[in-house]
Length: 448
Ligand code: TRP
Image (tube, rainbow, N blue to C red; front, side, top):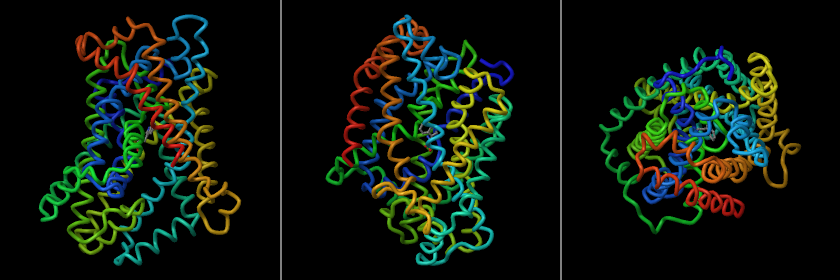
Protein backbone atom coordinates (compact mmCIF):
# COMPACT_ATOMS: atom_id res chain seq x y z
CA UNK A 1 0.00 0.00 0.00
CA UNK A 2 1.34 3.27 -1.07
CA UNK A 3 1.53 5.38 2.07
CA UNK A 4 1.43 8.80 0.49
CA UNK A 5 -2.07 8.42 -0.92
CA UNK A 6 -3.49 7.96 2.55
CA UNK A 7 -6.22 6.06 4.34
CA UNK A 8 -9.89 6.76 4.70
CA UNK A 9 -11.51 8.03 7.86
CA UNK A 10 -14.58 6.05 8.86
CA UNK A 11 -17.01 8.63 7.53
CA UNK A 12 -14.83 9.17 4.47
CA UNK A 13 -15.01 5.49 3.64
CA UNK A 14 -18.78 5.18 4.08
CA UNK A 15 -19.40 8.27 1.96
CA UNK A 16 -16.89 7.22 -0.70
CA UNK A 17 -18.31 3.71 -0.93
CA UNK A 18 -21.77 5.27 -1.07
CA UNK A 19 -20.47 7.53 -3.82
CA UNK A 20 -19.24 4.46 -5.68
CA UNK A 21 -22.56 2.72 -5.31
CA UNK A 22 -24.89 5.64 -5.99
CA UNK A 23 -24.55 6.51 -9.62
CA UNK A 24 -26.30 6.66 -12.93
CA UNK A 25 -27.60 3.24 -12.00
CA UNK A 26 -29.74 4.83 -9.29
CA UNK A 27 -30.93 8.03 -10.87
CA UNK A 28 -31.07 7.17 -14.54
CA UNK A 29 -31.36 3.42 -14.88
CA UNK A 30 -33.38 2.32 -11.86
CA UNK A 31 -36.35 4.63 -12.54
CA UNK A 32 -36.49 3.78 -16.21
CA UNK A 33 -36.28 0.02 -15.81
CA UNK A 34 -38.85 0.21 -13.02
CA UNK A 35 -41.06 2.02 -15.54
CA UNK A 36 -40.41 -0.51 -18.29
CA UNK A 37 -40.99 -3.56 -16.10
CA UNK A 38 -44.19 -2.31 -14.53
CA UNK A 39 -43.37 -0.92 -11.08
CA UNK A 40 -44.10 -2.54 -7.71
CA UNK A 41 -43.39 -6.22 -8.35
CA UNK A 42 -40.10 -5.37 -10.04
CA UNK A 43 -39.10 -3.12 -7.15
CA UNK A 44 -39.93 -5.93 -4.74
CA UNK A 45 -37.63 -8.41 -6.50
CA UNK A 46 -34.92 -5.77 -6.57
CA UNK A 47 -35.23 -5.11 -2.83
CA UNK A 48 -35.17 -8.80 -1.95
CA UNK A 49 -32.08 -9.35 -4.12
CA UNK A 50 -30.26 -6.45 -2.53
CA UNK A 51 -31.04 -7.81 0.90
CA UNK A 52 -30.31 -11.50 0.31
CA UNK A 53 -27.47 -11.39 -2.18
CA UNK A 54 -26.25 -7.88 -2.93
CA UNK A 55 -25.48 -6.80 0.60
CA UNK A 56 -23.69 -10.10 1.34
CA UNK A 57 -21.47 -9.78 -1.71
CA UNK A 58 -20.75 -6.17 -0.91
CA UNK A 59 -19.55 -7.16 2.54
CA UNK A 60 -17.54 -10.05 1.06
CA UNK A 61 -15.74 -7.63 -1.24
CA UNK A 62 -14.99 -5.43 1.74
CA UNK A 63 -13.57 -8.42 3.62
CA UNK A 64 -11.07 -9.13 0.83
CA UNK A 65 -10.03 -5.49 0.50
CA UNK A 66 -9.80 -4.71 4.18
CA UNK A 67 -7.83 -7.87 4.91
CA UNK A 68 -5.60 -7.62 1.84
CA UNK A 69 -4.82 -3.88 2.08
CA UNK A 70 -3.47 -3.91 -1.49
CA UNK A 71 -4.57 -3.80 -5.10
CA UNK A 72 -7.08 -6.46 -6.21
CA UNK A 73 -4.56 -8.82 -7.80
CA UNK A 74 -2.30 -8.80 -4.75
CA UNK A 75 -5.29 -9.22 -2.45
CA UNK A 76 -6.39 -12.44 -4.12
CA UNK A 77 -2.81 -13.63 -4.20
CA UNK A 78 -1.83 -12.96 -0.62
CA UNK A 79 -5.11 -14.14 0.87
CA UNK A 80 -4.90 -17.51 -0.88
CA UNK A 81 -3.99 -19.92 1.89
CA UNK A 82 -1.30 -21.94 0.10
CA UNK A 83 0.94 -21.85 -2.93
CA UNK A 84 -1.20 -24.16 -5.01
CA UNK A 85 -3.96 -21.59 -4.84
CA UNK A 86 -1.90 -18.61 -5.95
CA UNK A 87 -3.54 -18.79 -9.37
CA UNK A 88 -6.38 -16.93 -7.67
CA UNK A 89 -4.48 -13.75 -8.37
CA UNK A 90 -5.92 -13.88 -11.88
CA UNK A 91 -9.34 -13.25 -10.35
CA UNK A 92 -8.00 -9.81 -9.51
CA UNK A 93 -7.80 -8.87 -13.15
CA UNK A 94 -11.55 -8.35 -13.15
CA UNK A 95 -10.47 -4.91 -11.95
CA UNK A 96 -10.04 -3.83 -15.57
CA UNK A 97 -13.80 -4.18 -16.03
CA UNK A 98 -13.98 -0.73 -14.45
CA UNK A 99 -12.23 0.77 -17.46
CA UNK A 100 -14.56 -1.11 -19.78
CA UNK A 101 -17.57 0.32 -17.94
CA UNK A 102 -16.04 3.78 -18.08
CA UNK A 103 -15.90 3.72 -21.89
CA UNK A 104 -19.67 4.22 -21.97
CA UNK A 105 -20.35 5.47 -18.42
CA UNK A 106 -18.26 8.56 -19.04
CA UNK A 107 -20.07 9.20 -22.32
CA UNK A 108 -23.40 9.17 -20.48
CA UNK A 109 -22.00 11.55 -17.84
CA UNK A 110 -21.14 13.74 -20.81
CA UNK A 111 -24.81 13.77 -21.87
CA UNK A 112 -25.70 14.99 -18.38
CA UNK A 113 -23.19 17.84 -18.70
CA UNK A 114 -24.85 18.75 -21.97
CA UNK A 115 -28.26 18.86 -20.28
CA UNK A 116 -26.88 21.06 -17.53
CA UNK A 117 -25.74 23.37 -20.30
CA UNK A 118 -29.21 23.20 -21.86
CA UNK A 119 -30.79 24.44 -18.63
CA UNK A 120 -28.97 27.70 -19.29
CA UNK A 121 -29.72 28.09 -22.97
CA UNK A 122 -33.24 26.68 -22.94
CA UNK A 123 -34.84 23.30 -22.43
CA UNK A 124 -37.05 21.70 -25.09
CA UNK A 125 -40.70 22.60 -24.58
CA UNK A 126 -42.46 19.81 -26.46
CA UNK A 127 -41.90 16.07 -26.54
CA UNK A 128 -41.08 16.26 -30.23
CA UNK A 129 -38.45 18.90 -29.59
CA UNK A 130 -37.04 16.91 -26.72
CA UNK A 131 -36.82 13.77 -28.82
CA UNK A 132 -35.16 15.71 -31.59
CA UNK A 133 -32.59 17.20 -29.22
CA UNK A 134 -31.74 13.86 -27.67
CA UNK A 135 -31.62 12.07 -31.04
CA UNK A 136 -29.44 14.82 -32.45
CA UNK A 137 -26.98 14.51 -29.63
CA UNK A 138 -27.09 10.73 -29.56
CA UNK A 139 -26.90 10.02 -33.25
CA UNK A 140 -25.54 13.08 -34.96
CA UNK A 141 -23.22 15.09 -32.78
CA UNK A 142 -20.22 12.90 -32.03
CA UNK A 143 -17.84 15.77 -31.43
CA UNK A 144 -20.09 17.46 -28.93
CA UNK A 145 -20.37 14.15 -27.07
CA UNK A 146 -16.61 13.69 -27.18
CA UNK A 147 -16.11 17.17 -25.77
CA UNK A 148 -18.32 16.45 -22.77
CA UNK A 149 -16.87 12.96 -22.39
CA UNK A 150 -13.45 14.62 -22.20
CA UNK A 151 -14.65 16.97 -19.46
CA UNK A 152 -15.74 13.97 -17.42
CA UNK A 153 -12.39 12.20 -18.03
CA UNK A 154 -10.53 15.30 -16.85
CA UNK A 155 -12.61 15.73 -13.73
CA UNK A 156 -12.23 12.08 -12.73
CA UNK A 157 -8.51 12.12 -13.51
CA UNK A 158 -8.04 15.29 -11.48
CA UNK A 159 -9.66 13.74 -8.43
CA UNK A 160 -7.67 10.52 -8.77
CA UNK A 161 -4.39 12.41 -8.87
CA UNK A 162 -5.12 13.59 -5.35
CA UNK A 163 -5.08 10.01 -4.02
CA UNK A 164 -7.40 8.51 -1.43
CA UNK A 165 -7.37 11.24 1.14
CA UNK A 166 -7.02 14.49 -0.74
CA UNK A 167 -8.76 13.31 -3.89
CA UNK A 168 -11.36 10.62 -3.41
CA UNK A 169 -12.35 11.18 0.21
CA UNK A 170 -12.47 14.94 -0.08
CA UNK A 171 -14.60 14.88 -3.23
CA UNK A 172 -17.08 12.43 -1.75
CA UNK A 173 -17.27 14.30 1.55
CA UNK A 174 -18.49 17.31 -0.40
CA UNK A 175 -20.52 15.84 -3.25
CA UNK A 176 -22.44 13.09 -1.46
CA UNK A 177 -24.05 15.30 1.23
CA UNK A 178 -24.83 17.78 -1.56
CA UNK A 179 -26.44 15.02 -3.60
CA UNK A 180 -28.53 13.89 -0.65
CA UNK A 181 -29.59 17.43 0.07
CA UNK A 182 -30.70 18.01 -3.52
CA UNK A 183 -32.61 14.74 -3.72
CA UNK A 184 -34.38 15.30 -0.42
CA UNK A 185 -35.26 18.82 -1.56
CA UNK A 186 -36.72 17.44 -4.79
CA UNK A 187 -38.61 14.82 -2.81
CA UNK A 188 -40.22 17.49 -0.61
CA UNK A 189 -41.17 19.40 -3.72
CA UNK A 190 -42.67 16.31 -5.34
CA UNK A 191 -44.56 15.43 -2.16
CA UNK A 192 -46.75 18.48 -2.76
CA UNK A 193 -48.08 17.04 -5.97
CA UNK A 194 -51.39 15.16 -6.04
CA UNK A 195 -49.58 12.56 -8.06
CA UNK A 196 -47.21 11.68 -5.24
CA UNK A 197 -49.56 9.04 -3.93
CA UNK A 198 -49.86 7.54 -7.36
CA UNK A 199 -46.08 7.38 -7.61
CA UNK A 200 -45.90 5.60 -4.25
CA UNK A 201 -48.55 3.19 -5.42
CA UNK A 202 -46.79 2.57 -8.72
CA UNK A 203 -43.50 1.81 -7.03
CA UNK A 204 -44.63 -0.13 -4.00
CA UNK A 205 -47.90 -1.91 -4.77
CA UNK A 206 -46.75 -5.13 -6.40
CA UNK A 207 -48.77 -6.56 -9.24
CA UNK A 208 -47.12 -9.91 -9.74
CA UNK A 209 -48.96 -10.58 -12.96
CA UNK A 210 -46.65 -8.00 -14.51
CA UNK A 211 -43.53 -9.82 -13.45
CA UNK A 212 -41.88 -11.47 -16.44
CA UNK A 213 -38.79 -13.66 -16.12
CA UNK A 214 -36.89 -10.97 -17.99
CA UNK A 215 -37.91 -8.52 -15.28
CA UNK A 216 -36.47 -10.82 -12.62
CA UNK A 217 -33.14 -11.13 -14.43
CA UNK A 218 -32.99 -7.37 -14.87
CA UNK A 219 -33.72 -6.82 -11.19
CA UNK A 220 -30.99 -9.22 -10.09
CA UNK A 221 -28.48 -7.83 -12.58
CA UNK A 222 -29.25 -4.29 -11.62
CA UNK A 223 -28.82 -5.00 -7.93
CA UNK A 224 -25.21 -5.98 -8.67
CA UNK A 225 -24.52 -3.01 -10.86
CA UNK A 226 -26.02 -0.51 -8.49
CA UNK A 227 -24.06 -1.78 -5.49
CA UNK A 228 -20.82 -1.73 -7.52
CA UNK A 229 -20.14 -5.41 -7.03
CA UNK A 230 -17.70 -7.60 -8.89
CA UNK A 231 -14.92 -5.46 -10.28
CA UNK A 232 -13.00 -4.41 -7.22
CA UNK A 233 -14.30 -0.86 -6.71
CA UNK A 234 -15.41 -1.52 -3.18
CA UNK A 235 -12.46 -3.85 -2.57
CA UNK A 236 -10.01 -1.14 -3.56
CA UNK A 237 -11.66 1.40 -1.30
CA UNK A 238 -11.75 -1.08 1.58
CA UNK A 239 -8.03 -1.66 1.10
CA UNK A 240 -7.50 1.91 2.23
CA UNK A 241 -9.26 1.36 5.54
CA UNK A 242 -7.33 1.51 8.77
CA UNK A 243 -6.81 -1.95 10.29
CA UNK A 244 -9.20 -1.38 13.17
CA UNK A 245 -12.11 -0.19 11.05
CA UNK A 246 -15.12 -2.47 10.98
CA UNK A 247 -16.88 -3.28 7.77
CA UNK A 248 -20.17 -4.91 8.67
CA UNK A 249 -21.99 -1.72 9.59
CA UNK A 250 -20.32 0.19 6.77
CA UNK A 251 -21.54 -2.44 4.30
CA UNK A 252 -25.11 -2.25 5.55
CA UNK A 253 -25.00 1.51 5.51
CA UNK A 254 -23.82 1.63 1.91
CA UNK A 255 -26.45 -0.89 0.77
CA UNK A 256 -29.09 1.09 2.62
CA UNK A 257 -28.05 4.48 1.21
CA UNK A 258 -27.87 3.10 -2.29
CA UNK A 259 -31.36 1.65 -2.11
CA UNK A 260 -32.77 4.70 -0.37
CA UNK A 261 -31.45 7.04 -3.04
CA UNK A 262 -32.72 4.86 -5.89
CA UNK A 263 -36.18 4.84 -4.31
CA UNK A 264 -36.18 8.60 -3.80
CA UNK A 265 -35.07 9.19 -7.36
CA UNK A 266 -37.85 6.91 -8.55
CA UNK A 267 -40.49 8.65 -6.44
CA UNK A 268 -39.40 12.09 -7.61
CA UNK A 269 -39.33 11.14 -11.27
CA UNK A 270 -42.66 9.30 -11.26
CA UNK A 271 -44.39 12.08 -9.32
CA UNK A 272 -43.33 14.53 -11.99
CA UNK A 273 -44.38 12.20 -14.78
CA UNK A 274 -47.79 11.42 -13.35
CA UNK A 275 -48.42 15.05 -12.45
CA UNK A 276 -47.61 16.43 -15.88
CA UNK A 277 -48.55 13.55 -18.08
CA UNK A 278 -45.60 11.47 -19.12
CA UNK A 279 -45.37 7.77 -19.78
CA UNK A 280 -43.52 5.70 -17.15
CA UNK A 281 -42.42 3.08 -19.67
CA UNK A 282 -40.33 5.37 -21.81
CA UNK A 283 -37.02 3.55 -21.44
CA UNK A 284 -33.54 5.12 -21.48
CA UNK A 285 -34.91 8.45 -22.71
CA UNK A 286 -36.98 8.90 -19.55
CA UNK A 287 -34.77 11.46 -17.87
CA UNK A 288 -33.38 12.93 -21.09
CA UNK A 289 -36.63 13.29 -23.03
CA UNK A 290 -39.72 13.15 -20.79
CA UNK A 291 -38.37 15.08 -17.80
CA UNK A 292 -36.85 18.12 -19.54
CA UNK A 293 -40.18 18.88 -21.19
CA UNK A 294 -41.94 18.77 -17.85
CA UNK A 295 -39.31 21.00 -16.29
CA UNK A 296 -39.61 23.46 -19.18
CA UNK A 297 -43.38 23.68 -18.61
CA UNK A 298 -42.78 24.88 -15.08
CA UNK A 299 -41.09 28.09 -16.20
CA UNK A 300 -38.34 29.56 -14.07
CA UNK A 301 -38.91 27.14 -11.18
CA UNK A 302 -38.67 24.30 -13.65
CA UNK A 303 -35.36 25.53 -14.96
CA UNK A 304 -33.95 25.66 -11.44
CA UNK A 305 -35.35 22.21 -10.68
CA UNK A 306 -33.88 20.88 -13.92
CA UNK A 307 -30.50 22.36 -13.08
CA UNK A 308 -30.30 20.85 -9.61
CA UNK A 309 -31.66 17.54 -10.87
CA UNK A 310 -29.02 17.19 -13.56
CA UNK A 311 -26.38 18.46 -11.17
CA UNK A 312 -27.32 15.72 -8.70
CA UNK A 313 -27.11 13.20 -11.50
CA UNK A 314 -23.69 14.47 -12.53
CA UNK A 315 -22.43 14.22 -8.93
CA UNK A 316 -23.77 10.69 -8.65
CA UNK A 317 -22.14 9.70 -11.92
CA UNK A 318 -18.77 11.29 -11.21
CA UNK A 319 -18.34 9.80 -7.75
CA UNK A 320 -19.07 6.36 -9.23
CA UNK A 321 -16.73 6.98 -12.14
CA UNK A 322 -13.90 7.67 -9.71
CA UNK A 323 -14.43 4.24 -8.16
CA UNK A 324 -14.41 2.58 -11.56
CA UNK A 325 -10.94 3.84 -12.42
CA UNK A 326 -9.23 3.68 -9.00
CA UNK A 327 -8.80 -0.14 -9.05
CA UNK A 328 -6.71 0.12 -12.24
CA UNK A 329 -4.71 3.03 -10.88
CA UNK A 330 -3.95 1.21 -7.66
CA UNK A 331 -2.98 -1.94 -9.55
CA UNK A 332 -0.56 -0.05 -11.81
CA UNK A 333 0.97 1.67 -8.80
CA UNK A 334 1.26 -1.40 -6.61
CA UNK A 335 2.20 -4.13 -9.04
CA UNK A 336 4.05 -2.25 -11.75
CA UNK A 337 5.43 0.44 -9.43
CA UNK A 338 4.18 3.24 -11.64
CA UNK A 339 3.88 6.71 -10.20
CA UNK A 340 0.29 7.62 -9.45
CA UNK A 341 0.36 10.36 -12.05
CA UNK A 342 1.47 8.02 -14.80
CA UNK A 343 -1.13 5.43 -13.76
CA UNK A 344 -3.93 8.00 -13.80
CA UNK A 345 -2.91 9.44 -17.14
CA UNK A 346 -2.64 6.10 -18.92
CA UNK A 347 -5.85 4.68 -17.50
CA UNK A 348 -7.64 7.86 -18.55
CA UNK A 349 -6.18 7.78 -22.05
CA UNK A 350 -7.27 4.19 -22.57
CA UNK A 351 -10.90 4.63 -21.63
CA UNK A 352 -11.07 8.05 -23.23
CA UNK A 353 -10.04 6.63 -26.60
CA UNK A 354 -12.30 3.60 -26.46
CA UNK A 355 -15.04 5.99 -25.29
CA UNK A 356 -14.51 8.02 -28.47
CA UNK A 357 -15.06 4.83 -30.48
CA UNK A 358 -18.19 4.18 -28.42
CA UNK A 359 -19.49 7.60 -29.42
CA UNK A 360 -18.76 6.95 -33.08
CA UNK A 361 -20.45 3.57 -32.82
CA UNK A 362 -23.79 5.30 -32.28
CA UNK A 363 -23.22 8.20 -34.66
CA UNK A 364 -24.53 8.40 -38.20
CA UNK A 365 -21.86 8.24 -40.81
CA UNK A 366 -19.46 6.27 -38.62
CA UNK A 367 -21.49 3.58 -37.01
CA UNK A 368 -21.20 1.03 -39.82
CA UNK A 369 -17.56 0.47 -39.00
CA UNK A 370 -18.25 -0.05 -35.34
CA UNK A 371 -21.21 -2.37 -35.45
CA UNK A 372 -20.79 -6.05 -34.79
CA UNK A 373 -23.68 -8.09 -36.10
CA UNK A 374 -26.63 -5.99 -35.03
CA UNK A 375 -24.93 -4.46 -31.99
CA UNK A 376 -23.03 -1.21 -31.81
CA UNK A 377 -19.77 -1.14 -29.88
CA UNK A 378 -21.73 0.67 -27.15
CA UNK A 379 -24.17 -2.26 -26.86
CA UNK A 380 -21.42 -4.88 -27.12
CA UNK A 381 -19.49 -3.35 -24.23
CA UNK A 382 -22.53 -2.82 -22.04
CA UNK A 383 -23.75 -6.33 -22.77
CA UNK A 384 -20.43 -7.97 -21.99
CA UNK A 385 -20.24 -6.12 -18.68
CA UNK A 386 -23.78 -7.03 -17.62
CA UNK A 387 -23.88 -10.60 -18.74
CA UNK A 388 -20.31 -11.71 -18.44
CA UNK A 389 -17.71 -9.57 -16.68
CA UNK A 390 -19.76 -8.53 -13.64
CA UNK A 391 -21.27 -11.96 -12.93
CA UNK A 392 -17.79 -13.43 -13.32
CA UNK A 393 -16.35 -10.99 -10.79
CA UNK A 394 -19.25 -11.64 -8.42
CA UNK A 395 -18.90 -15.39 -8.48
CA UNK A 396 -15.14 -15.28 -8.03
CA UNK A 397 -15.56 -13.11 -4.95
CA UNK A 398 -18.23 -15.39 -3.49
CA UNK A 399 -16.19 -18.56 -4.05
CA UNK A 400 -13.01 -16.98 -2.78
CA UNK A 401 -14.52 -15.70 0.46
CA UNK A 402 -16.82 -18.69 0.90
CA UNK A 403 -14.42 -21.53 0.09
CA UNK A 404 -10.83 -20.42 -0.43
CA UNK A 405 -10.07 -17.94 2.32
CA UNK A 406 -9.60 -19.45 5.74
CA UNK A 407 -12.81 -19.28 7.71
CA UNK A 408 -11.17 -17.90 10.82
CA UNK A 409 -9.77 -14.96 8.89
CA UNK A 410 -13.21 -14.16 7.53
CA UNK A 411 -14.66 -14.58 11.00
CA UNK A 412 -12.01 -12.30 12.39
CA UNK A 413 -13.28 -9.44 10.22
CA UNK A 414 -16.96 -9.95 10.93
CA UNK A 415 -17.95 -12.21 13.79
CA UNK A 416 -17.34 -9.73 16.60
CA UNK A 417 -19.64 -7.17 14.98
CA UNK A 418 -22.21 -9.43 13.40
CA UNK A 419 -22.75 -11.96 16.15
CA UNK A 420 -23.05 -15.67 15.52
CA UNK A 421 -26.46 -15.92 13.92
CA UNK A 422 -26.04 -13.12 11.42
CA UNK A 423 -22.60 -14.41 10.54
CA UNK A 424 -24.00 -17.86 9.80
CA UNK A 425 -26.72 -16.44 7.58
CA UNK A 426 -24.22 -14.25 5.76
CA UNK A 427 -21.77 -17.11 5.26
CA UNK A 428 -24.52 -19.34 3.92
CA UNK A 429 -25.53 -16.63 1.50
CA UNK A 430 -21.94 -16.23 0.27
CA UNK A 431 -21.33 -19.97 -0.10
CA UNK A 432 -24.62 -21.05 -1.62
CA UNK A 433 -27.14 -18.37 -2.48
CA UNK A 434 -24.88 -15.79 -4.09
CA UNK A 435 -23.03 -18.21 -6.44
CA UNK A 436 -26.31 -19.77 -7.56
CA UNK A 437 -27.85 -16.38 -8.14
CA UNK A 438 -24.88 -15.31 -10.22
CA UNK A 439 -25.05 -18.48 -12.30
CA UNK A 440 -28.76 -17.92 -12.82
CA UNK A 441 -28.05 -14.37 -13.88
CA UNK A 442 -25.26 -15.24 -16.30
CA UNK A 443 -27.17 -18.13 -17.83
CA UNK A 444 -30.32 -16.11 -18.41
CA UNK A 445 -28.54 -12.99 -19.54
CA UNK A 446 -27.12 -15.00 -22.40
CA UNK A 447 -30.59 -15.83 -23.57
CA UNK A 448 -31.80 -12.25 -23.85
N1 TRP B 1 -22.88 1.53 -8.97
C1 TRP B 1 -22.69 2.57 -9.91
C2 TRP B 1 -24.04 3.00 -10.46
O1 TRP B 1 -25.05 2.61 -9.97
C3 TRP B 1 -21.76 2.19 -11.03
C4 TRP B 1 -20.52 1.55 -10.55
C5 TRP B 1 -19.50 2.14 -9.87
C6 TRP B 1 -20.20 0.19 -10.67
N2 TRP B 1 -18.54 1.23 -9.55
C7 TRP B 1 -18.95 0.01 -10.04
C8 TRP B 1 -20.85 -0.87 -11.25
C9 TRP B 1 -18.39 -1.25 -9.97
C10 TRP B 1 -20.26 -2.13 -11.19
C11 TRP B 1 -19.05 -2.33 -10.54
O2 TRP B 1 -24.13 3.74 -11.39
